[in-house]
Image (cartoon, rainbow over all chains, first blue to last red; front, side, top):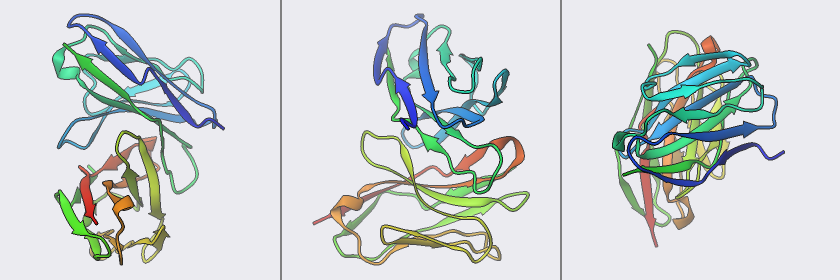
Length: 114
Length: 112
């Protein structure tokens, strides 16, 4: 199993540009999520999904869109990039049912918006 | 709502010192508890876990015990190594909607 994969690893955008961060998992996990990690702020949940066709907002959803057309893929779209979106983005997945709900994380995407 | 509070860092120790990173939580139900570790430039990976009161999770010399009466899950290691330098996150998960709650992370630096 490849686990959770993310592309790209690094990205530089100009303010106002749009882009999609890709996330895929091959573990047949129902639950997938996106976090951003900023210095001193830990992990903040952006969006999550409990299955294909179902998405919901997390703690900091503004400026981001998601969709879940398949179990495997959960892309994160930045609609109009802003410098405040400079961060490291992590995708994670887990089974929805069955203790103990541990999450599997991708390696991250480091995004800089200038 | 749920929350996780962990000891603020950074923590700097000498090799072979004893490590404790405190973690307390609030939850509406009976969560599973986790410690994740993030090495420089990498994603988070599970270090250890506990699913019910008085369970002890352990891995790579690290231990943590699920204490329901004090709502705590403190991470300990008897003798740290330089290779343990990383950021450590305490987290909880409940079955409700699948969401997890993370602490802010504690940066550990171990000096030779």
